[in-house]
Picture: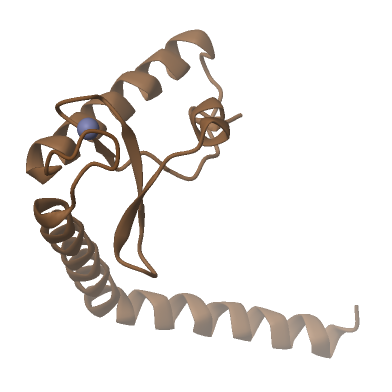
Length: 126
Ligand SMILES: [Zn+2]
């Protein structure tokens, strides 16, 4: 690498770091707001979505059950694989409180879909 190029990359990297530091007070709250909106939308859909297996309305309880199940699976993963950082995409978003059916929330269509068996096996990813 020539001297001019390394200077260019050093200046670019510095400007990028400065830009991120300046924008962080804007980016961080915006990301938190977006996450809150996604949670509210998912909760709203759950309140009107009927379980495809038993017909019960999922409701907020199904989201709490899914969070608890996800936490349990992650605890189990960390216990079984100490020091390993999991790489995964969460696919369990609701658990029917009546029959236990697992659902994945599809953001694009804003609905729940039955979680496939393959997704279940991938949880806790490696
Ligand atoms: Zn059900």
